[in-house]
Length: 351
Image (cartoon, rainbow, N blue to C red; front, side, top):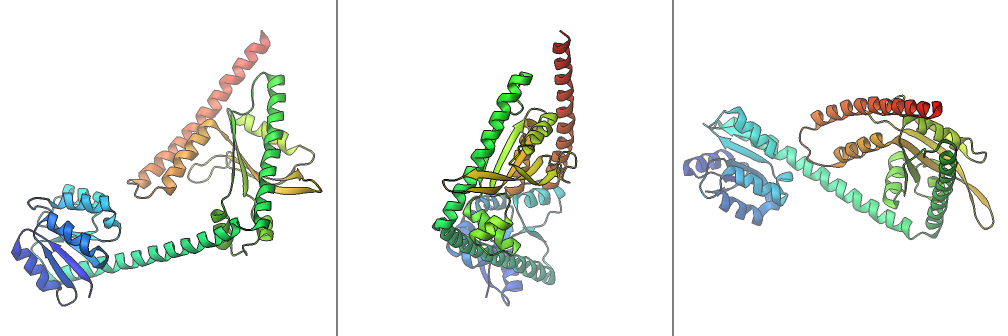
């Protein structure tokens, strides 16, 4: 039988809930918050739900919820608050802290049973799913480790690193020429990265491709990546045009998220290039992704990335709306700054 912990300083409430639930659950009782935390520490893996009163001596219900959250137990054990209050602010505070549901006094047996049953089953399914995800992650890490130990894979990574160096060199040459001709630099910085073996394995598996060196070459175009940060939007297009006109670079694909932003507001110019690398006995072409952003676009993307991958973020919908609004404001600012720069350049020419 699943274990339910009832926490209430009133003995009559504890016994009423025990009588309602004992036919379907193993019911344990605690008279205050400190006793409840102690029992959970001992039986956390067997506890299907906690029924918790808010007003208790020693440690009240809010303190118990905070303690469960600190220990990470609240993600695996649902808490249903026992309350005689209907105050919206109390329920709002509890929900914000991570409470799953409420059981109001006086107790109605059918409601208590259904709410406990539904909440416990929901969390059981959630916990099982998380266990499957963790197991899948362990399998992915094992397969990724095999990739790391593979000589053909390591040679391929060397080739991707060479492609990155090739693109960086061309960009630096263009930067020097641009600086000489126009007395300013077309980009502020270059960042580069190689996909990790884990990320490579996950992407191939997700797309249904075999995890082989040949499959990586054929099906992945973003193993080698560079991000070029420019000051102004027209520098992005000018620099991308210069780069794609290199007679031995081949433009395979272009996605312009500046002119056509993603629904969330993301803006960037993406190029997939086939880049030549020169080895001791051969010349090879390697797929390389180059992203161009302004400084403001890059700052926005960094903040959006944190939201996307950070867990337990409150007010997610509101933050996403604010980010979309910021993305529009950033676009206006980028072009306003570009217009100011153009006026300054015209003024310098006139002088």
